[in-house]
Length: 158
Image 1 (cartoon, helix red, strand yellow):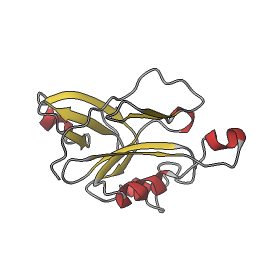
Image 2 (spheres, one colour):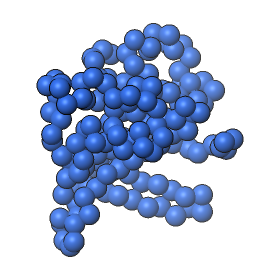
Image 3 (cartoon, rainbow, N blue to C red):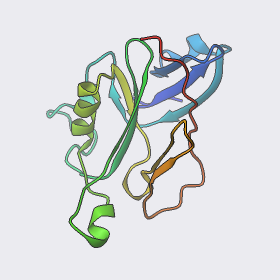
């Protein structure tokens, strides 16, 4: 698809993950095993898109919410970040409150991502991680999410 802040997360036929801008998508057609598209782009080659800079008025840069983002490093590692407000007790800890989109982009930068895109946020932002020993850790939220992204770790040669 198109849009100034859309980005496609792809995995090629060899298992390499990539985050592609709309202009890059045609060059990968026929070489992708799976793909999803999301919004907003947080980082392109290590920099925030101009739409996320303070002078921009194209999107709401002040809204705070629970956020989920995926990013890739220059050497192909995948970074997944879920932000969540840690309240003292009760339901406050699950309220969809957290960073702004520009703050999330800067967090992904600090974590080492060179490319990053936001995934579903607010009451949909959830994450589950199954360790190699089978232990499952979940960060759920108020809304049931019927679809998800499943990743399988591979040997890291870093």
